[in-house]
Amino acid sequence: MAAAFDHSWRLLNARPQSILRQLSVFHGGCTAVAAEAVTGAPAADLEELIDASWLRVDAQGRYRLHELTRQYCEEKLQTEHAPHCGETPDQVRDRHAAYYRSLLLARQGELYRRPGILTEMAPEYDNLVAAWRWFVATDVCEAARTYPLNNPGKRRSQTAYEPAFRGSATP
Image (cartoon, rainbow, N blue to C red; front, top):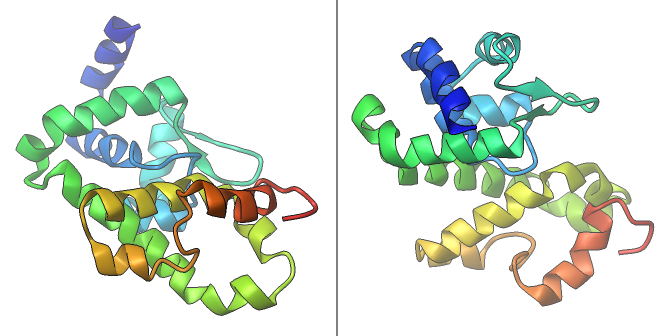
């Protein structure tokens, strides 16, 4: 499998490789807006990756890497991104976490007042949890403490929020 990935990877130029490495930080896919915020890639660049069979769009319009592809690209992020792009993998993860924190902060008032908001945001659950965990792992205490879902990675909160995020009728 690695040989097939390696061959296809070598066929890409530097820009698509950089985008794929950065897309590997997403869990459960992402919107075009999220992809551009984290990678700087406009929709046209994402379409090129779809044409090259590295990326796909699901029925909800979310961009997704197959999990094996995501893992391969994540390894490339760790081993190749800094020398090729001049930024560390941590900087990419920082952008991802900051994007999802700002998404939650912008919708914070709705989280507790608007019916259906958790179901609407359900596709983002895995990215929201990954962002919170990144803040905790990197000791960005203020960001973790003020994260609007108040610790989505902890079992207590998963019990309260996860069913709603996953589309269940009762949170």
